[in-house]
Amino acid sequence: MYSLPSMSGMVALSIDRLELQRPSRTRLLKIAANARKEANACNSNSSPVTPSIDRRELLAGAIAGGASLASSVDSHALADPIGLPSFKHCHRATISDDINRRCCPPQPKRATIDFKPDSGPMRVRPAAHLVDKDYIAKYNEAYAKMRALSRGDPRSLRHQAKVHCAYCNYGYRQEGAPKQTLQIHFNWLFLPWHRWYLYFGDPGFALPFWSWDQEGGRYIPDMFRRETALYDAKRNTSHYEPTRVDLIYSLGSDKKSDEQIREDKLSVMYNNVAKVKQPDAFFGYPLRKGSSSINGPGGVERAPHNAVHIFCGSPDEHNNEDMGNFYSAGRDPLFYCHHGNVDRMWDVWRSLGNKDFTDPDYLNTKFLFFDENQDLVRVKVKDSLNNEKMLKYKYQAMPDDKSWTAYEPKPLKQTPWSGSSYEYRLVKASAENPEALKVEAEPVTITVDQPKGSACDEILVLEDMEIDMRSAISFNAFINLPEANKNTRVSCAEYVGTYSNVPHFMSDIGKGHTEIVNATFSIKANVEILGLKSADKLVVTLVPRGDGSLTFRGASIQYA
Ligand code: C2O
Image (cartoon, rainbow, N blue to C red; front, side, top):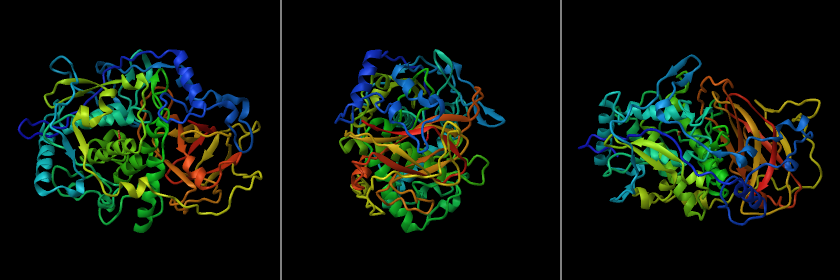
């Protein structure tokens, strides 16, 4: 990245279209069926976490009319592969209620070329807190040059930020489905798209990563605070050292002690990254043609990733710019350093024995990015999976990975499942009251059927969550802890994960600012530690923390 002689910058850009093989319906059905069997391998591809009607239950009974049973996830199993737009058809992106902006890429000067495996040399991306002065000088100079490039140059920082904006603020529609927006967050494209986004640039330079999961990376890296090209004025300056980064930070939540944030970190990393085995729950749900462009982010995306965005953005800015809103996040050089560590999580996860998706719709998804020569390069998801071999970079080894990959949470409460039926009055969902469950200021507790079964992973799915995408809503999820509230520490075996949203505006496509997503939590380890394997119901408590509210239609437990 950032070669000084060639003035290249981190250059990035856009998608064009996907040409995907069409999986046969038979194959998809078979995959779904296999997944429901008690498979041992978690690398079964496609979307095994398909909610089934009989497994859903709300505390107060069935949802009126069963209207919600056609879940957004079900539709995946029958969908065609997604098409992405030619960027000739890029629309203005929606920035806020009354602002639209052009985030579209310039026209390439030459014909599009296909990605060729990187011939090296191997670049080792260093932890940002460990780099020396010379490295920082070089890094800084590269950003200075990117800032100086003209607006129309795809390598400029301005353009770089727009690439992210176009994909996150609905600049694109899906090819062949002009009413379908395109979003590379909230689904399985999140990790590979951002991997490619960071990839192009000076082949002699290795980007730094902000290792927020490590003790050494507990503060926003110092180099970004200096008044250099790495600086960005729109940040939460009260979150510089000595404030430790909170990996489940949410707006308006109470201040935590340094020690609590440190302890939380291990549990957050363990629960949202390390223990997650099933690919949907780690990467996010599949995105296929014609389906809603968002269906549910994976654990790594929601927290730590989203929460760190919110932690960095400025609370004085209208939309929590820059890092705290997708349209503006790419303006802050810190973004790319943050995403280096997000990308590293993919490597760590694989090093734990987990396997990537093998679904051809995923592998053959294509994007377009400008390279350091301003050529537009066609890349495939499948070429990004093996970064060492195909992209010739890897990450500096980090000493603290084990502190969270091998974390062993302890139960907060020593009360085993009693077998009696729990009655919590907090939830009203019945024929008389067909409203979905609302999560607003107070915790919500429900019970969910736990069918007998065992598999590589056990997934708690909160289905059809309706979220106002402009909000920074966040909640922690617990099992077997109905008394959980906003002061409950997450460093316990009852905590199963966090949902956190980064605000962004939706373009005017007739559905307002609301999207429907599923939230998946891997709970196998928690259930075992808590001795709940034979319980026929699990008590699930959601503790909201961010601003805003959400509703959801039901919950189920799936084995995959
Ligand atoms: Cu595309 Cu960190 O977001």
